[in-house]
Length: 638
Ligand code: ADP
Ligand code: MG
Image (cartoon, rainbow, N blue to C red; front, side):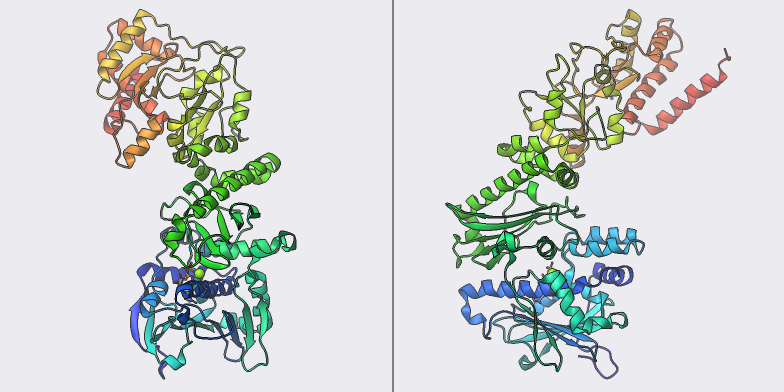
């Protein structure tokens, strides 16, 4: 594998740029939980066996060794080596290059960025990240300064070796068949100085028991030149065992190897469906949020087995809004020897899918009712994804509405349900009011909410991008329509004021009406209308969408995505505000027109800023503001 000078021989290849950076970061900034490398390699070996088991359904000749699938790990303490051998599917030369020389995972970029940010300072975090991005194989370089992979694809007459020191390049070359496994892969780690302990059989066996005991293929640890193999994992599929026999740690370990995550599952759901379809499901809701949760290319990880044969690792068993759930389904009703595609098209598959979604929703509802702490963390992590179901899955909308938690203007500390909201409706309140935006802190302080506050009307503060979509399609909850506080005229005058509050009045003097008409003329290019408002208390003005327009936030999101343009908003001014009153009287006296024009623009720009937007024309904005300030500074002091 190496020539006499120690340098690897064979065809040199360069890793993709990202990979070498990744390797560097991995080796230099993540030391905390190096143990996980063995779990990653064992899970790859098990995957390879399960892949071959599936292929062999139609081509039994592919398997040409006896004794069944097994993973054999040989440790060589004297030479500081570990070899993980499987008799699975193996890799062709192309497989080697694409699987071990590229990281195709969509999350790689995000991973690198995140890792570069934490660089070293938070090593634990870094290790947690590895698994989340499916870059398991590379974790070998945490413990090895050279990794050799000898492999032969089942049914192929060629075998290859892949070798790398994890420094930016790897080599591949053909090897004689007699030096390769009959089919399958042998991964040899040449342990680095800090990792020699891993070649002690006792230690390795303990780690495997701890991390990989629920794997579906048996694992043996063999001491080089030693007597016998030590079976460290039985290869019995966890989900087939009785619930009462499974310890919580076993579930958690299995979850970690299934999800490639490092946390505890927030919820473990294990059930057997009987009746028209028989299947077993073992599902987990992760305890933390993967970084690439919102990447549309991210696939769920649902493993579909038919009578213990793995059919697909990415079965389409869950709708997008449940994509964070990790699960295994084992069915006894699906046909085994047809293609994956045919299985996924079968009515039995559709029925299983539906059964799973219903059950998961039931379990979430139960958790929300009986274990609010757990549900709270699930909602914090995945609420934004679950809300996608509100518009993607109308059939389940009501069930999801019951789960949904909201931050509202009433109490931003505790999340509220729509049922809470309805229970606290104010007298004569007929709508569920909401405001959308991207920054919850700013939403809370929006001028548009002032009038609602004086009447004690609760407003949902919706700050997830998905919110703008579902509110625009949802008809309402318990007969109460959703209404935006930033859209159209907000008629809340029937709702009584809270004690001590005075009603902002829309009543305008002729002076103010003239001012408003002038402002409308001045701002005509930027606003659809200027009108007096009754939704403001302290602020001078705010922007709202015209009555039949789209929600302003939704418009912004769509425009950013190149879909549709932004329509002109309506500027509402507060007739009771001292600034407005003063301007109106100046205008009536025929005072300096530029002053009034400047003020109109500045009021408009302020309203934009309150909505989180920049002034319409920053240069003009500065010029106007400077003129105003100069004027104020030069005015004789009273
Ligand atoms: P993942 O397992 O999430 O796909 P890994 O980095 O662990 O990511 O492995 C990358 C790929 O390398 C695998 O998807 C598989 O195609 C290939 N591979 C790794 N180990 C083996 C093995 N023992 N046998 C066959 N293929 C393997
Ligand atoms: Mg893997």
